[in-house]
Length: 126
Picture (cartoon, rainbow, N blue to C red):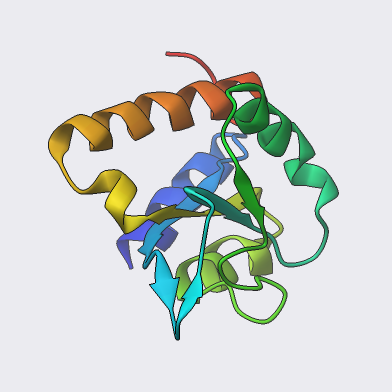
C-alpha cells in the first residue's frame, strides 16, 4: 500500500519518520462528559510522549492522558501496522469534534498541534 511504500522509502534514506493518526471524538459519550479538548493516546509507555504532554500543557491546554480511549488496548490499524509493529515513533491524537467544527478552529488546532510537536522534538520546523 502507499503508506507502507512511503515509509519504506524514508527508512531506506536513513530517516525515522513519525507516524501520526489524528481522529476526533464526541464531547459526551454514554452520558459521560469528556472535558479534554485533546487527548494523546499511547500503547506501550507514556514516557516518549511526556514532551508532547508538557508542550500542550504549557499552552494551557487540558490534555487527556490516554483519553478518550485507552491506547493500551487498541491504536487502530494505521499505527499498529505501520508504526508500532515496525518500531517507528508514533502518536494518536484525538481532538474533541466541537473544537474543530469550523475552518477557523481547525486552523487554530493545526497551528497549536504543529507548535507542540515541534517543541516536543517530534517534528522539525519547516
